Length: 268
Ligand code: PEP
Image (cartoon, rainbow, N blue to C red; front, side):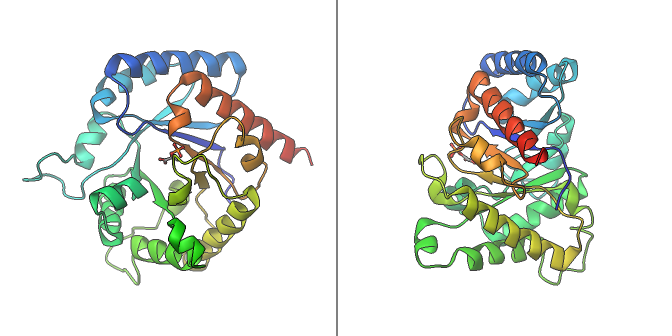
């Protein structure tokens, strides 16, 4: 099991102007400071346009807030209109990159093989991947959940890949289990179901890379109402939050309630 701090990742997707992003960071920093929820790992994945203004303000924040990209291209440079490279992200001091989000896979045709290439690029650049995997509703209803997740993991991590040290520091990554049908739908699996799947993910990684495990996050319609139930589960190392991360107050509430649940499980 991973011993990392509980992680709370905000994926803003295609939301927020520069001013709105700056105001959010100011508010969240203040709220975290007041509530003392500083023993968590809080990461914001803003749109690319807001990165240049957020990055310097994160340095001045009184609490620790990390910066993630929502996507990256696997080439270092070249004729790839509309894309961004790891070097450009590092210019902003961006430490994390979300890779393989289901919206990238389903709306933009990103394959497992491309996810693998992106992981390689991110690792070579010394950044930390937040690798997303998840099954569709149809796959779940056909009893295919684990075989889909296993395939996504196997190809992403490089089956029999010996050409680089891709997974050498896998404990520094995050894996996010995000059932596609739960994203933005208000529906979720039960915390018990998520815990079972997280266990399978951890066993899969342990069987290939030993017990140096990354935190496994849950993502999909996380809210103030359900966060405590998810974070009570020992195998849930944090959450990836979309819609409910767009207001500083609601994202902070999720962090506070989540940290409360982690503390209550530690006192048993
Ligand atoms: C997501 O898109 O990664 C996500 C978890 O979204 P939401 O929280 O809105 O379901």
